[in-house]
Length: 190
Image (cartoon, rainbow, N blue to C red; front, side, top):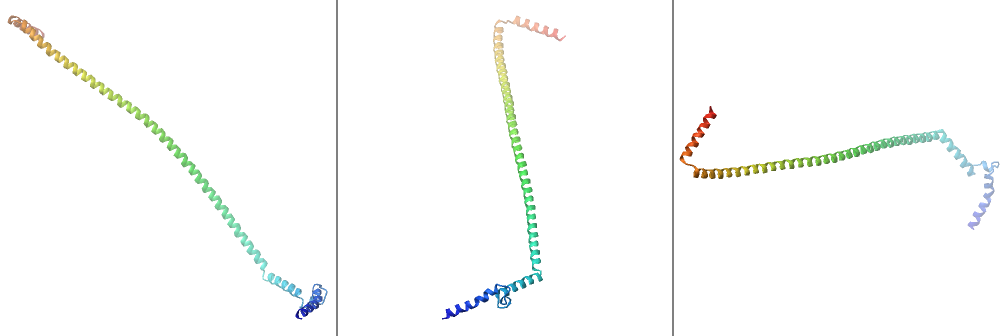
């Protein structure tokens, strides 16, 4: 039963609803028409927004936000450019340091090669000096040995000559030799 009464009420309201869509009907302009009330509220709301300058405030806020974003983008660009400059500077410095390290390595290699050449020359000089010293010692030893042999030969010759002279010498021939030696010394001194 209740369903029937709701159905009858809806069918009775249908002509009013149909009339609410027609602006030339009397029901359209009454406060029972919710479409009219919603339209009036909408226009009042729009009026209040314009009265309090909400669109200008929203536009200003959007402009401020756009300016903030633009300044942040400009700052980001500036930071990016600065970072690129710093990166380029570090890359340049790294390249210079690498070149300097290469030059140091090359200089060290050259110095090592020169030191090796100098060491070889020093070794050759040292060997030559040692050979010369050894040759001098050998020559000295030879001279010493020759002198010893001569001295021994002289001692042997003197002993042999003494023996020979002692066997052949008489007292008269000894006196004659002494007289001859004295006369030779006198002639050479005067």
